[in-house]
Image: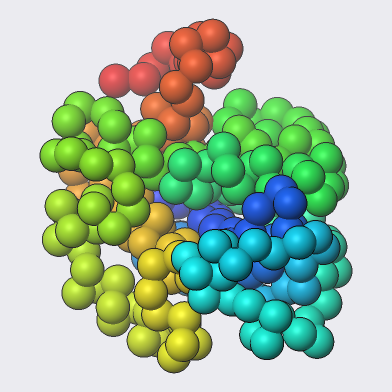
Length: 223
């Protein structure tokens, strides 16, 4: 019998930046056993023009980014990470696009959905926003801050941010803070009987909005 998703490491990723500027900050949170087991973050030099309106959102301008290496220097870390567990994010299509813009393919890695492999894809991803779109789990907006408030996770997010995030980056639109928020949202699902015993493959399936992709991923034992 396949293991519940809580028995597999899942790597929650958030990027600040755009296709134009490149990734200027990354945050990674590994969730294992339903708890945060590791974190990492980094500031990266832009590879294109960084619009002032982007800086107004994430708070990173030329002064903060000067002297840092570009994101592409993190290949060994992200390629190695993908070999140990699936990736996850809030509205994961954004992170997937930014990652593939730097490296179109991953290092050969296990297929954590079907148990086969290897695969050189970065996904399929687990998407905390799509998971909360299921079954009316989101009372309204699927925005990260709104969901954290709905599920009453803000105090726990603040506690974890104080442990893991730089003092000046303990806010939304800071990469590690947002990755922590996404991980907490999925961790909270482990307390719901319907979700506690699902596999990683089931979470991927529920994260997939496209009906054709759902059909390709579906497993008979779901529910």
